[in-house]
Image (cartoon, rainbow, N blue to C red; front, side):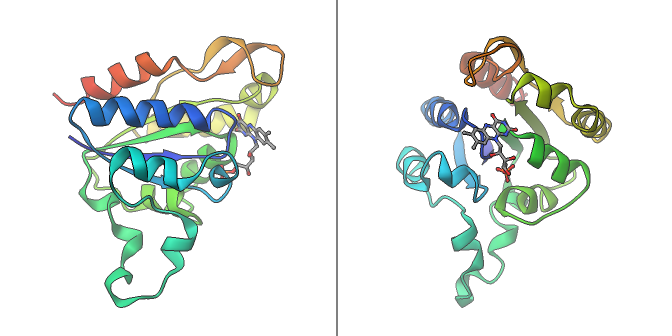
Length: 180
Ligand SMILES: Cc1cc2nc3c(=O)[nH]c(=O)nc-3n(C[C@H](O)[C@H](O)[C@H](O)COP(=O)(O)O)c2cc1C
């Protein structure tokens, strides 16, 4: 199964590396794209080292060499499944509105119509409960996206509540279920 992982700028970004590692071990062909904000939390090198493939970053997308002229279309147009992890409030909003301003939201715009789409929200409880965020999640549902999480528990900011990234084991299980 060809999987594209979109990593956003949330504190749970490091957990995306664990998911990527497990998918590679399970025999999936995994590519990763990152928002510029995600690069503040984790490096592209981590993902490239785990996948053995180049990670798509804003810088790489901006390069003008001839062999990369259509970099914004690959690997998005080739994959069976796209997974947004962690899904930030900001990128959920971009996708719900069809925007494509970075490698992740642009990657989503280039997915095949029959590509399966999962997203794994992770954010502070107040962000998650925000009417605009809930409205955008409703839009994703309507557009065929499957939500994995969020869970309730202790959040990175120190408070308790809903907004925690789903357990990585559960995320991997859900991804592998999409094979059939
Ligand atoms: C330390 C820190 C942690 C953050 N954690 C989250 C988070 O877990 N979820 C979220 O939606 N935004 C979080 N943010 C805010 C996002 O980084 C911000 O909205 C950013 O613009 C998201 O960009 P992206 O969606 O393009 O990756 C955090 C910001 C900081 C400074």
